[in-house]
Image 1 (tube, one colour):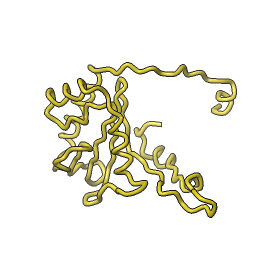
Image 2 (spheres, one colour):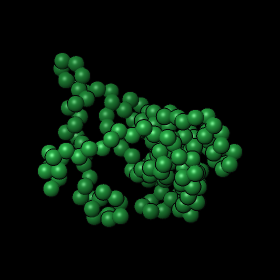
Image 3 (cartoon, helix red, strand yellow):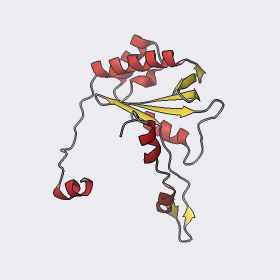
Image 4 (tube, helix red, strand yellow):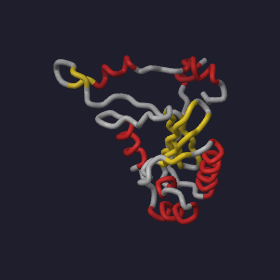
Length: 168
């Protein structure tokens, strides 16, 4: 599914509360100190991932056990080579973390109107931004990812007979 249709997106939303049972620990079934989290948007380009999270103005990224901040830290720790890290920093003068295979951008604002952004890991924190600035920065990320493909070993994708039947 793509986000080209808001109606299709609204009908595809899953809450996943039923899956919390899988996170239970102990004999009494107490909840684990982890819970599900989501990311609002993801772009893959030649082995690089740009995750985008959106928040209303004034809302922080939840921390603590199972919070998004921990997940974001883990995602952005999936680092590539230091050469890629240095090349992006020098060429673009943005936070170096955007050069890594998994990059995370947090946007604050009202629906479809950006007010602030944060490249996850930027020590200076969120800064005011506009839609046009985000477009320009994501365009630079996309161009950089296009010109620096990661060599990935991808498993063969075989569609078996049962899978074909299931989706038809």
